[in-house]
Amino acid sequence: MKIGTTELLIILAVVLLIFGPSQIPKLTRMVGRSVKSFQKGMTEEGEGDSTSAEEKETI
Image (tube, rainbow, N blue to C red; front, top):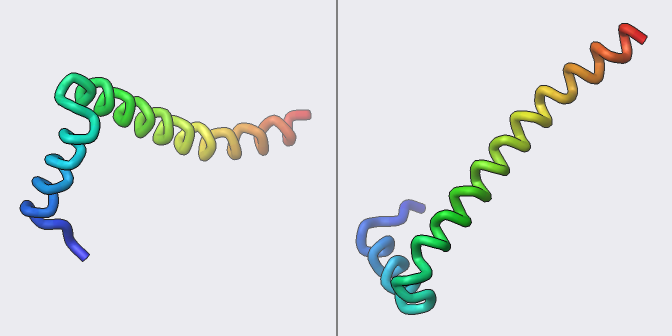
């Protein structure tokens, strides 16, 4: 199921009506930080597993 251009424009219009033009930059910043934090957590989780196994071997 793909979202087309028309659907994206409708979603954008609804978001603009709900939050107003002054809140959009704050909202996008918050979403961007959340995505970055999630990606960082996923990366650290994968790295954390291998280091804990190495630490167990040295002890």
